[in-house]
Image (cartoon, rainbow, N blue to C red):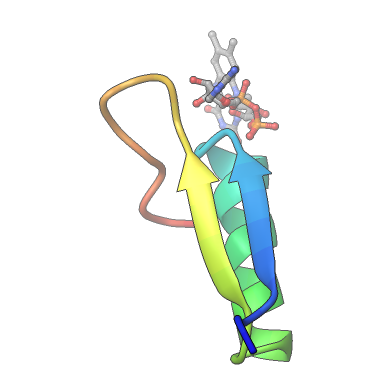
Length: 44
Ligand SMILES: Cc1cc2nc3c(=O)[nH]c(=O)nc-3n(C[C@H](O)[C@H](O)[C@H](O)COP(=O)(O)OP(=O)(O)OC[C@H]3O[C@@H](n4cnc5c(N)ncnc54)[C@H](O)[C@@H]3O)c2cc1C
């Protein structure tokens, strides 16, 4: 069975915080972040 996937739109503060929190709580999730610019936040 394919892993559950969480899609996050936006890789700045809110998006990367949500993605990292979700991964801490659910390490089994596959998480994909879409960011329209060339950089994502690295301190979330
Ligand atoms: C001039 C200015 C100075 C600031 N200075 C400070 C400061 O000194 N300290 C502080 O703590 N806060 C500061 N802030 C506030 C801080 O920038 C915001 O609170 C924070 O960036 C909000 O993050 P966010 O993830 O909610 O939204 P955003 O930063 O708006 O992030 C949204 C992200 O989603 C991406 N995105 C949008 N649409 C799409 C799409 N369709 N597909 C893919 N990606 C998409 C954008 O490219 C962006 O990266 C400042 C804000 C401004 C405007």
